[in-house]
Structure formats: C-alpha cells, structure tokens
Length: 115
Length: 113
Image (cartoon, helix red, strand yellow):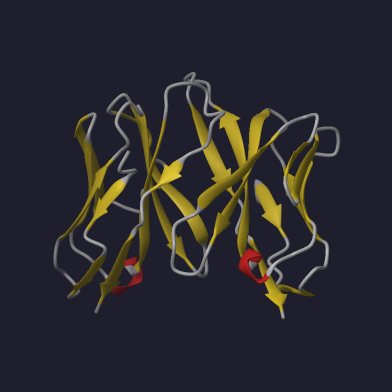
C-alpha cells in the first residue's frame, strides 16, 4: 500500500495567491482528516470527512479556507487568498471504517510558506 | 483547560535510562487512546494503542487510568533512536456517530549518548 499521498511536498507562494493542497487517502479508508501543524499551536484539526461528506469543519480558520472531497480517493484543501500566517505544515490523514479505534495514517505533509 | 495536556519537555535522558511521560485528558467520554511518535520534520506515526488493561510492545509500555483520566508511556533502556516528540491522542465519539481525535502538543524526548 502506498500510504496516504500528499502533494506538493513543499509550496512557496506569495501573499494573496491561491494555494491548493492535495491528498489521496489509503484505499478502503473512509475517513479523511486535514490537520495544520505549527510550533506555536501544535496539530490542529481543520476538517474531517466521513464517506466523502464533511462532518466537522469547526477548525477551518476562516472563509479563506475550503476543502472538498469529490470522491473516496481524492481531497483538496484550498487557501484563497493566502497570508503569511498560513505558513505551516499541512497534514492529511485517513482511517478505516469503524469507531476510530485503529488510529490514523498520516501523509508526509505539505510544508507551506507564504511570503 | 486543554482537552489533552502533556508536559512539553524536553526530557533529556542518557542512553539506557527509563523515562515516563504522562498525559491527561478532560473528556470522560473518550473511548480510545494512542501514543504517536513524530520525528523532526516528519509526519506523526502510530506508536501504540493504549488499552484499559495496559499493553507492552518491547521496551514500550502504555497504561490507561480512566478514573484519573490520564495515560502514560514508559520507555525502558532508551536508545538514541528514541529521540523524538511523543504525542498523546484521545479518540472522542461524536453525537453524529462519528468520532474525532484530539492530539496533545507532544513531549519532546532527547536521548543523550
């Protein structure tokens, strides 16, 4: 299994530009999570999909952030317009069907720098 | 009060030492628990689940105390390669029938030669 695949690995963009992060979960996993990690705030859950449906988006910072999961094998997180305070590592994770008793598998992350 | 709290450390210990981390959680409805390990500039990886009866995996032992709402991780005979950040994770069931994980901010361990 290739694991959770994220792209790009690194992204440097100018303030005001649109940024799109991509994630392919593990085949057969029906829950997908987007996290953001910074030194100051640790790992923060942004949004959670179950069977492609957003379940909890209370962690999405503001309207500049949006996420979609058009099918079971693909999700995007978009920031428009980007700001320097969005600089962080963005992780995608997936987990199999159930009650969450088996843990998540994380992708390698996208390191975003907004200048 | 944070939902999951950990001592950020760092814990600096010599090779071969035994070290223990604790983590407290506030939601009594938490249903499962984990320890994750995160190396510098890498993604978190599942280290072990934490069962009510306690569980052991080689040099690592995890325990759960539901009454006091804390979990612990014990590392015996620590190795240089154990240097990492250890994240405590709590699984909380939601009213929708789904769940979410809450991560602690992590405890940094540095094993010294």
